[in-house]
Each structure stands twice: as structure tokens, then as C-alpha cells.
Length: 228
Image (cartoon, one colour):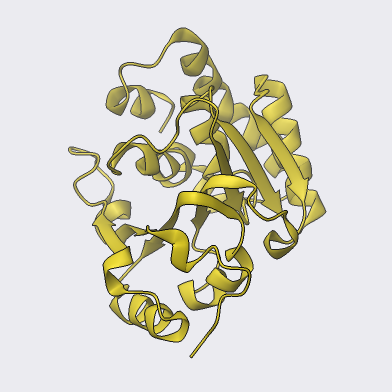
């Protein structure tokens, strides 16, 4: 499947964004032969299982997450997902794509440079070593459990920031564990099912996919996130 699937669900895209999405397939094909960041099988489904999946963060969430001048941290970006597709969609937003594996960031830099994405900064770092207060939004694609992830990001968000995680399956237990361990009210968590986000899509990939969002991050921005 090619970039046309992106244009189908995002018909408002300007010519620059369209051209960049068109280039993604060839760029990832080139880089993936040199540094494997996407499984060979998944390369056949790049635009659905990686690009559209990333863009679900823009399509399915409420409020404008990606405002002009704001900064988004993609924690554990791997080969650039969800950060690069989102950076194409939102050129006025600054995206920091962070991963501890140097060769993965080499791919991110190669792709973003080829696309001319001057709103992308690629950083080789563990997320817990990133500066405090470095972003307004944190996004991540199934890096680890919520309870494992929150201590890494406890001081990275600015006031009124939001965290969004692309995940799958039943998240009830995972949310309850994180809420209990770090004494975060359950009302701070919300789950968005993605199965109806892209209607008419002939792929069952999104049937179990979800976004988990954490708001009211005064509970998360303290100098030390305490566990019970």
C-alpha cells in the first residue's frame, strides 16, 4: 500500500506534505536495507502500520496537541515513529526524536534530512537523561509498561503537558498498576480505541490498537515521582 492511503484520510494536506509522505516509502526502503528498524514483513505495510498508526495521534485525539511553537518529545522513537509522520503533518511544531541506540538515530537523521524536516531534532539519549521541562507533549509507541515508563519521563513535561502512548490490547490492568504505584488518580487516564479512526480500511491492524493519554500532569512533573 502506498502514500495514497494517507491522502485518503488526510485530504487537506498541502503539496509539501504530500511530497514528503510520497518519499517515505523509498527512504525507509533504502535505510532499512542498511540498518534494520522495521521488520521485513512490515515494510510491505509501512503506510498503514507505521505512518497511519503514527498519525492516529493527530486524527483521534481531542484538542490541538501539536500547536505552533510547542515541543513534542518522541521517547524511544526507534526508526522515527511516530515522530517523523507527525512532523510532516505539523511543520510548525518542534519534534525531538530520542532513542538510546545510535544506529536508529542515524536512520532518523537520514530520513528527516532527506525530507528537509527542519522541525526535527534527533538525539541519541536515554529518555530519562533528557533535560527537565523540555517538552509540552510526550508521545511513544509501546516502549514499555506505563509503570515502567513514567519514572523516565517524570520531569520532562512543562506545565499542563500531556503524555500519549500508542498501545494495543486491554490496558485496564496496566493503567491500574501505574495509577496505584505512583498515586495518580484514574481520572488522569483516558483510552481511545482506534478501530474506527480510519473507516473503510481493509486491514484489521487497528482492531485492538489504542491511545492511552495521561493529563493533569502536576502528578507527573514533580522532582521525584514517588511510588507507594
